[in-house]
Image (tube, rainbow, N blue to C red; front, side, top):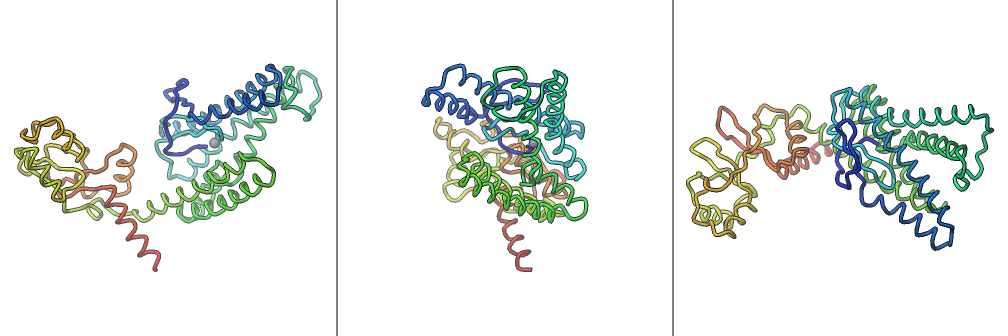
Length: 369
Ligand SMILES: [Zn+2]
């Protein structure tokens, strides 16, 4: 799967500058196998063999994710990391391409890796001249042929499973990219997300009836993720062609750098903002957050001048800049606000919270139409 967001976990290794992280929930999987094996009194060798098979699957999952990440790199899109979860891997791309053709190739590259591994293991089995048999592949992994058989079936399943059009699984993204070649990205996403939700409900019902909790779990995940993706694309469509100047707040909290910390705290208590712009005349010297001000008071610096504190040097944005690109920058780089500067003067601030309200208003208006 290729997605934005989600990070954190135990770093395993790096390849071509991409970190591979193990999310802590992944440890539940071997723990569950070992635990249930011990409870049912299986021999250690059997438990180890099963754990080994799970590890093989996850090596294939990592290669699948590198399929996405290295294809994205060809289009100049970096991957922050690859995280392994018990339900599979996630390659966190810094952004998703807008070009449907690029999205198509980045997405299909993952499942294609599994198809290639399946083809290679099939060839290896065929070359060793042993006939194929599918029974007890999972349980009887004692010989190399059986391991090869397992690699073959696992990768064929990974290939087919990922191609299910359950957005945001790979198949759903492929569906969206193919639809986007014929209609707007927003409409394509809406259709793909609806198909994804349908599959998700199917997974949950199937998981409950077949007694497969993982399947139901994936269903819930797909359902939530499909909604989130549809929302983010809708936000982008709403912000299309809108500039920072149109969404910025023109009323903001600013004080001269020669004011004392105590004065700033007094204003904060009287109804200040989350961030203070520290000014030198018309020039912006830097930013102080509410937390930083309160911390300064706690450290007994109330009598200090504001320019005596370490000020944050903010990223600036021009009023003519694209609202959506600035929004993405704020989310990705973690800026709660961006001062808007025109001709060296601060004319407003772009704030995530304020932008969310703006989007709600826009959405309410377009919903009524
Ligand atoms: Zn994938």
